[in-house]
Image (cartoon, rainbow, N blue to C red; front, side, top):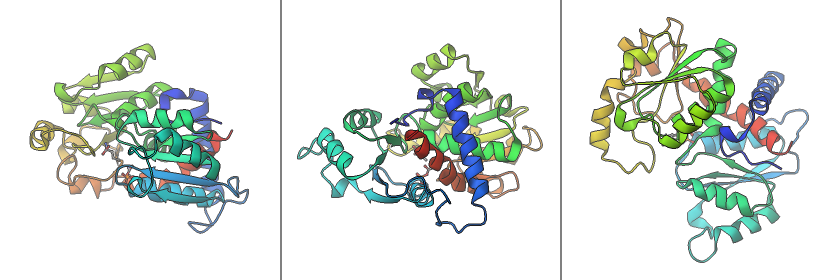
Length: 308
Ligand code: CP
Ligand code: NVA
């Protein structure tokens, strides 16, 4: 039994196996309906409980479909509707009860430590469906998408523009180390990756360049990624942050400075006209809808890995 909390918790070999299984399962079921189960139904008779402390469209839908395709079932729990560490029941007790009912838990939380606390008391695996510190399922899906379009990510250049200190950029830095690609982050000094992740990057020889110049960040890049300038629960002066990040907007002018066949990625939801222009997100280089679909396929192998 294993937990999937951060990309950095897994070896490169384990992460590679997850991606390869996702590719082969996706290929095998290409003629099946969206919710039909895979032939081997590895999750038959099993179920997943999903808890969302914050809103979600993709994570909610893609995990539900992933579990269906594996032959199992899922239930979504709204923290407001259950006893969930609000004084009348501790997280520990909720974890112990869920252990009796289901086979795996997926948690989206505002406090990363809730994942650790919950995981400590669960007798079943837990998957991080986004925390304030990381979004490993999204980045795994993004590696899958990248490789389906451009081949092996190893040695390629990915650029990250905008907020350099959020859950997505943290997981992307970890992925750069584990999958061995070059990561160039273009962000203002104020939104540079935090010390903890920078130390991890140093210890793990991540090929990481951080620059305040957006042009430099995208030069020679195979893929440009960005994210909302203000994340959910980001307690900042939104107006100030958006103004500071304006020069890092992914637009036609900036996209032209990457390789001519570079792709554009965004985990969604998107702030259209803020971190990216309509022209780019709706344009030929954008692969954002494929990213959303691949959440299903990457998460199926993440679930299987938890039981391997
Ligand atoms: N990308 C992503 O995690 O989207 P949701 O917030 O809709 O789940
Ligand atoms: N950084 C974003 C990602 C959303 C999927 C957030 O946390 O809101």
